[in-house]
Each structure stands twice: as structure tokens, then as C-alpha cells.
Image (cartoon, rainbow over the protein chains, first blue to last red):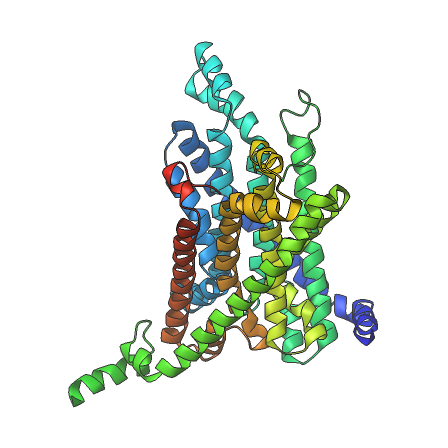
Length: 229
Length: 231
């Protein structure tokens, strides 16, 4: 129980939040890294996956990428990139590592989403004389939307996790509160940092579920479906 | 002889990424780290498997428990590994239990979901036929339902194991990360060969574990090979 009160005391101390290396600065770094890398990885993965799904090629790639992503330790890649020549260019080593681990869920889900679009609907759209571009934009994309967003959600949660690990080789973000706490044998700080990271990951997940509901192009046409993920 | 020795010493001194001399001189250290890595992973997945069974059966039996149980596992899965280990620190102190418990919690999520999905995909005809032949609930579970759910279960074990191999490295933060310890230590001293070698062994371990479990899956479920593979 002592730990709980110590953690509460740490979290309610104003100096821990403001100033250099405080919670607010680390939170800002974490949110910035996550947002920039999510935008970058979506810009790379989504057009590629939609195109591959549309032409029906690269299925094995989409599946194997996810498996490879699981087998490769994030921590190892972060350290390797930081020690590579890329590490001399500020945040770039971290950004590249984050994007690499966010790509597999985006690619796999968007590809599967387009491939699983009801073939009868796609046939009907073709029969109506839709061009490939119209087909992708007006039929396959709306049908694939829920899965694309599942991919975005998984990627975002993965990004928050990887950004936390980035603190180990000296990157910024909330992970720094944890590593600094370990360095000073300051358990309340370690636990406080971990709590903040966990809360941020859950908030990001909830936020994206909300975004999915708001943006779903099919939401006016179908009864609300309970979250299948 | 002395010529090759000088060259080899050169690669350690020059801090090259690839270094045969490193492999030769630090073989014992690499072996110890690999053994620690394997037992942490194996212990975590085994404990998770033992816990996942009753949980999946309970979630199937009491429908009301299903929603909260699955929601809880989703929340656990969202917590980043570094935060998970940090949160367990005050409970266990600086010990291997921190890493094993964290990995058990992650593996549980995958295993409970897959066992549940496997059990629910058992065709009603199969259970009906077994009941008609006078199978009691226990015999039905062990002789009909579990064998039919095996492909989904083993698919879950594969995902959990490969993830656990990769996540064990983060355990280096509490000093129990197997090969992760070597990566952590080498990161601080900027020792390139050690980082690359330990990382490569870690990926090899994950691939080897995956192939081993795939072979086990093939051996245990020969009927799935004729048609499409399950899971």
C-alpha cells in the first residue's frame, strides 16, 4: 500500500509535471512522435495496401509482414538504428523504427479489407460500368473502412509502445520517466511513468474507436454493429 | 596463426558490426543469455497456457463473464511492455518474476481468445453425435471439442511464443531480458558486434520456435493437412 500512496504523492507534485524533463514535456514529445509517425506510416502503407488489394496481388506479403513484425524485437531495432549512421540525425532513428513497426498492421488490415469486400457488390459495380478508380473509391474503400481503421488503431497502440521503448537508447517521450526512475532507484517515478504510458495507450485506442464511428462512410446505411474487434 | 589473430583482434578493436572474434571469445556469455531467454519465454507461455484453459472454459460456460473477460484482456494487451514491467516492479522487485508475469499477461490475451474461438467453431453436429453416443461433458470436452479446437489453440501458442521471444528483450530493464541484457549492455558501451549478434540470435530463436510449433501442429492435427490448414 505504501507504493500506492508514494505514486499518488509523485503524481500530485507540481514540480514533476512542469519544467525541463517534466511530465508535460515528455507527454508532448510522446504525442508528437506518435502523431507524426502515424501520419507517415498511413501515407506509406494505405495507398500501397489499397492498390495491392484492388489488383489482388501481394497477399502473401501482407500476411508475412505481420508475422515478421512480431518476430523482430522492437528494442533491438531501436538500438541498432540508434547506433547506425542514422542515429546521428536527431530523432530520425526513432522515427524510422516507429514507422517500421506501424506498417505491418496497416498493410495487412487494409489489404484484407479490400480483398474481403463482397465480391457480388464489386461485380455489380463493375457491371454498372464503374471505372477501376470509381470502384476503389466508391465501393471497395467504404466496405474496407472498418478493417482499415482496425489497422490504424493497432498501429497507433504499437506506436505508443515503441515510442516508450525509444527512451531506452536515449529518445524522448514518457518512457524517459520510467528509465530515469530506474536510474535513480525511484520506484514511485517508475510506476507513475508506467501508469501515464498505459493511460495514454488506452486513450489513443478509445479516441481512434470514436474516430472510426464518426467517419464510417456506411454508418447511415447500416444499423450500428457492436465492436467486433 | 598470428596473422589471423591480428586480423580478428582488429574487428573487435575497430568495433565492426560483424565480428567472428566476438562470437569465439564471448561464446559462453551468448549461450547463457540464450538459455535465459529460452526459459523465460517457455515458462511464460506454459504458465499462460495453464491459466488460459480454465479461463476460456469459464468464459464459455458463464456467458456473462465473457464480455468483461475479453475487455480486460484487450486492456492488458494495450499496455506497452516497458510500462507493464515497470508496473509489476513494486510487486516482485528486481526479479525474473516481473518479466515472466508480464509475458504471461500478454500471452493470456492471445490464448484465451484463440481457445474460445476454437471451441466455438466446433461443429454442432460433432457434439450432438458424441452426446447421442452417450459422451458425458468431460469426455466430450477432452475427446471431441479439444481435439477439434487444437489448430486454433496451437495457432495462438505460436503467436504468443513468437511475441514472447521478442518482448523478453525488454526485460533487460530489470536485468532479466536474456539476449536483451546483452543488447542493453552493448548499447551503453556502443559495442556494435554484440548488439547485432544478440539481435540476430533473438530473431533466429523466434523463427525456430515458430517452425517447431508448426511441426508440432502438423504432427498433432494430421487431418487438417488434407484440406485447408486451420487458424
